[in-house]
Image (cartoon, rainbow, N blue to C red; front, side, top):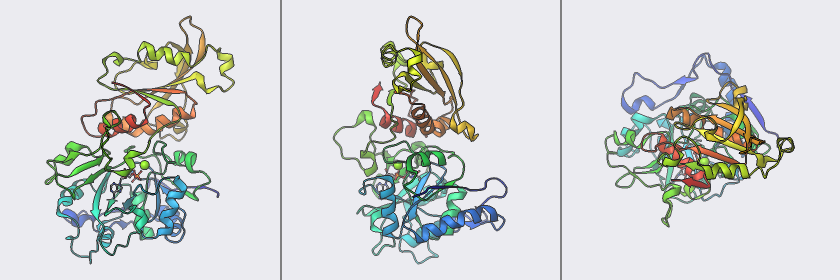
Length: 436
Ligand code: TXA
Ligand code: MG
């Protein structure tokens, strides 16, 4: 099947709005599409029509990552998601809604009253929706959702994204969209349309290209149906932000990171699979690892050099990928993380070509102790700012894979606050080795 990338016009007037004159949750009752947004709406209409009528999913941007959407009320279309992704069907999907009106229709509500929404979620919805937060809700009997969405569970995850493009697409489709991240199963989540194409070309019919994702890591998943409420997956909304909401002061973490995994069964089924992995071997340095304060330790540097098997640079030009090493820097490391290298120069990445990158890629020659050039180093600095690190993280892992590196060394950050917990959670899953 041919995969079309459909560019959605940006800029100009906004796509739609909520009614800010209304207080509390009433504000989110309806997403109103702007009559002036004609051009973008016209570009989205065929995708909305496709979602309503066909069984192959459509990839679309949200503020977190790109999603692979299908009508959540039809079994055929939901099965299409699992097929395209090569994802096990016991992993439940998040249901995306355009507004509270649509959410109520999934909870057995008759409209008008907001009672069908469990009281505990109201403070969260008010503060964080639309946005990178997924809440678990009870499935009514009967339910309009296709059973395949939730893989037999008694609750479903719901999210109202803040991306106006996503809200408008859902509204035009007129149905809630079940959507996992639009990566091939186990790969890092996609934050550009090109990432989706790299993974799913030929497996889906349509990718909506609407710029890169501003948050860059997936939504925080919470369960407020149990006591105390729990975080099942760290994401775009931090623990301390949740705690500031009435009813959520005691929220606890119910996910385990790689470094802490024991025998406990994972609560969010998706968390048990290998995830976020580039092809390269990822070595993560925890921020608490003193020896790795300003670069990789000698043993790792030796291992990186040993990868080259003593070949010369001329031989390495023949496409043997084992001569390339990647570095992802954040708050502490110096250029090339202390690897011996020369001629480190700016080397444009593909994302740069689209003017959307939140980082720069530098390339240089890797040298052995005698000063012979034996390979290449690709160095990406994501900067000091945690939000910016989150925005560039998946893209940087993919970019280094595209450069054919055999190893990626990553400078980890403190995971105490906000979105940093999500960054480190994803990195620990991607890592083959953790230096702690
Ligand atoms: O930001 C996001 O959440 C993105 C965008 C596209 O919205 N979506 C996303 O979906 O990350 P996915 O399928 O890659 O991850 C969904 C996560 C998984 O960890 C899954 O186990 C959990 O949410 N989840 C979904 N429904 C659940 C349920 N009923 N009970 C427990 N966990 C659930
Ligand atoms: Mg995913």
